[in-house]
Length: 200
Picture 1 (spheres, helix red, strand yellow):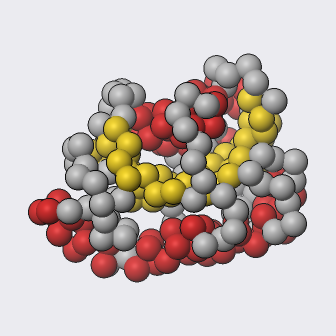
Picture 2 (cartoon, one colour):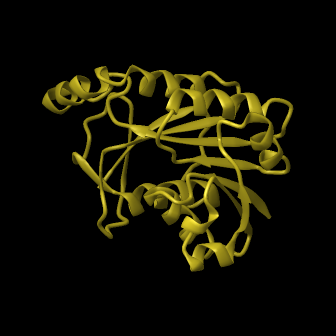
């Protein structure tokens, strides 16, 4: 039985992660959310719900206690959230952290697409810094670099290592979630300390 903590379960990717994991009998999920009322009825019935703010490091550490894997699909204060996650994980037996971020954070996408992404990434330096906080945390982790996010239903994904040409410039949120769930459940390799681009 794996215990998985979802941060950002009321968002598009987090919702899909909880939905897909709920179909796995050997997974026990906990969602840590500021506003439980934003969870839909289906999600709320399949998970343990804890109310709290990711920036509240002490409360987050309590939520992490006993968890094997942390999935963070967050928005807002990215840098503050990553620092809180890393601090909260200290002394705990967290096996893996998934941090959802975007393509281009490390200038890793070649060609014209990479040039366009670099323009946008430069406007949000804390986005890059947040990913680097996770990757240097000492906790095994995966940076999930999503392409331009869409609300479609295509769960087919392509996973590219840094520096490889991307398969496309977009990805449906459900496909990002599918990659994470496949990694957790062993359908895809759970490599430690990697940065993977996810596209449709």
